[in-house]
Length: 426
Image 1: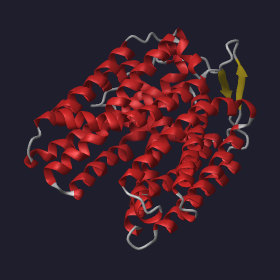
Image 2: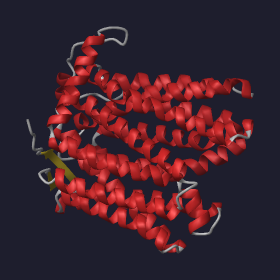
Image 3: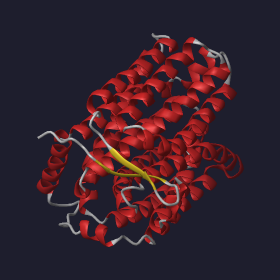
Image 4: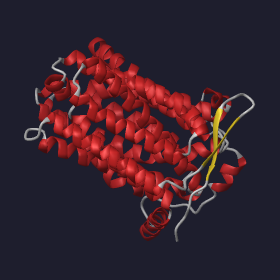
């Protein structure tokens, strides 16, 4: 996994990613606290999460059209610099009268991210060889899990020490540093060639944008592997959205513990994700993607159900860690399949649609869990989430049976992957 860092361009992207993600997790913990301190309202805090989700649902696949038209490296640089500047507007908010500005910043940040994320995912295959993609995606997942572990505690300490000002400045600086790292990336000739595309602007060519979006959706509809990935991950993420709302009730009502237990649950998730990122490369060497996906989802779904029916803290933490291991393994596998089975000129649109689907599915789970939470027991809702995860395993078994990853060892013993062979149905 770490062998891919010998690739200078990917290493620059990865360093920028881990710095930026760390800054994001600082703010993710501090900003809800800041809103609650100002307003004393749980509703106002919840509104922030709602407005953050909506641009993901509305813009994800549309932003992918522009990502496929623009230079992806510069798209990421400009996105990072824009986020760094926009974020500083939070420093103007000192009273409830300006609370709307925090919501506006949240919306703008999310809109900009809809361009950055698919550009990043689409760029990775041009920075490493095809046989190195599993290692690159595993390392990206590893860095996300690592920052999830260390970011919130650091954010809490920084917020207690320097209030929201210190956290905002730190996060803004992380975006600026990420932009600097990406600026130093030199694209190989094959990537430069693939990015010679007709230019398009935000202000015009509306019909062309619609046409390009339809082309992207047509590619998705006719590719069984892409459809299978979207169906599998979409079903699973509804279950994950349900669980996200239930972590506090799980601690209080099922495990009969307090807030400290919630911290242990989040830590167990993070450790499981770290292990999953480290193990998926080895697993991909010996099993086909469909087997990896089905085993991961069956194990995760079973663990979710087990947690609430055998409410022992130690067992629960073990099961939550297992869920983290297998969910990360699934994401690395499906992202690698998407990167290698979709033409470079369509990757932005496909990953934009992928991110949109993740947001819609998670949002659906959040809404369902919120509406049912006062009427249906936590145990029953966890059962539903587990069953959805098992249904995702069934979807994977049916739709991904012909997916392939060519995997082999390099002379350094790195775990690597090559071109996915996708069955396309016209």
